[in-house]
Length: 621
Image (cartoon, rainbow, N blue to C red; front, side, top):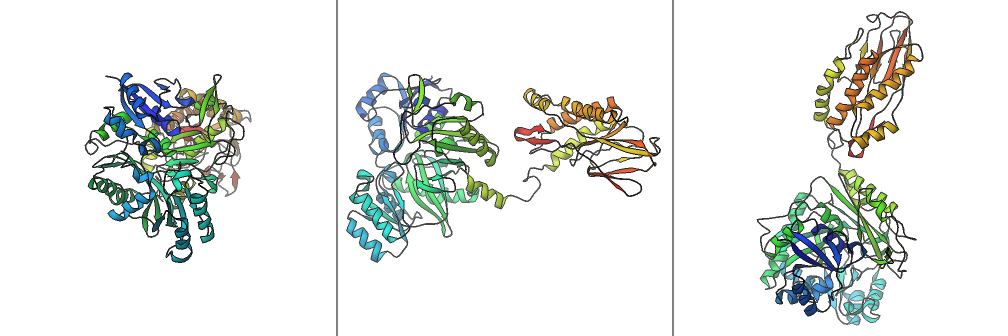
């Protein structure tokens, strides 16, 4: 029986959750309250005007509209006890109870909890009196106490990293006296400054067991290079190569499982999504903070990588079946999301700015998740600081970043603020630690050997007097005497395929590429009054698709047969068409397709046609 769901929230995280849930065959409709322009009348997804602050009204709405499950996105409703109230009214709800949500709602509670259960974290103290905090900062602190946090919920912005004690004291004053973060700053936590790599490790928890998600990394700073003010997040990528499988297992055991065990031991079972913000220091991993829901923008890179049906995962979590039915994730893929923010963010900003290009960006193969958007007179306008998140999934982190940035370029609103370097730490890590094997660098020797075996018959069919059309040696021999030439003159030609290549890629028909390439090169040689003798090809690609390569080279061989020239030297170094006119009877040997060495030892420069490959194994010239 199809189910109707209700997602609580209005940001990019909630759009992402609704998008993923709508893919489930179990789901009839996904309502989002209050939602945004991206969740308004989009297939199975539509917005609801039901009040989310009055839990009684919300519960009655769910019953009247046969809502089978409520999924709470933001932290504020969780801390306010929405899950408790809905479940008490008989409405299934996904998320932790208000007591369990204290792990995020109260940083002082969270830090004390970690101390009680031996979960690694920074040294800390909490204060309700600013004078005591000043005294501690100036006279007592035995550690670099330069991180000042509002203990309560502050929309991800209640953390100030000070450069010295004076700035830390000013942060306390701003939070506690000037109420920069409102009531969230009635208690402040002063922490040791940790240095290292920051990562986000989330998991599903059914109250007993945990199922970790791939590690992600958020980018808090506004500008490229991690410069500028802290924000609610300017982008994220997943998975983070800095977190090995061994380290992820350690995080699972020493942080995630320990936390769930501790909550259960204290009579507060944790059911929902648990988010651990971690710092990978030289002294080992340490927890910076806990969140009690999906991160934003981490959700936008996690959900596209989830292979399992999200609705089924949520049901397994609520039913305590995670251990027997863990979710599956796409392997060998990376996701990058780039946040497009209003000019002025994270400070004051203008609303109601028209957004264009949303239909065009879909053509680039990326997904746009709305955050601060609304509908006005049939068009989409901005309504928040973080306006859109543009997410791309590709086979590598570099390709995902490139695709996401291309998607951002296709969307327009005046003064849009965004970063172009999301994932730069992961890319730098990969560059530093990239494997030294051929396969790690994209050269699959086994696949190359299979290709050579496959195309040998093509080349053999092109054999003619003067040559041995045996492939795989990167070069070829041509005996001019055996071919009947006397006093030869060397003629060589090179050409490429442009527009036809684009058409071939779109049609997935590659054999004609080789035919066209040989034909144009042969014609250039014939125009010089020379006889085409051999064609020495070169095929390169980012990742070898044996089928595509075979089709191209089969076309080359067929054209060589028609032109009466031999196909020589397949092995991946160069591509050229060459012919000879008789001069001195010397034998010419091709060296790596760059020049010929004649019998007298003189080198004659040659030209080459290069065949390259861009993403998705497309052949290029």
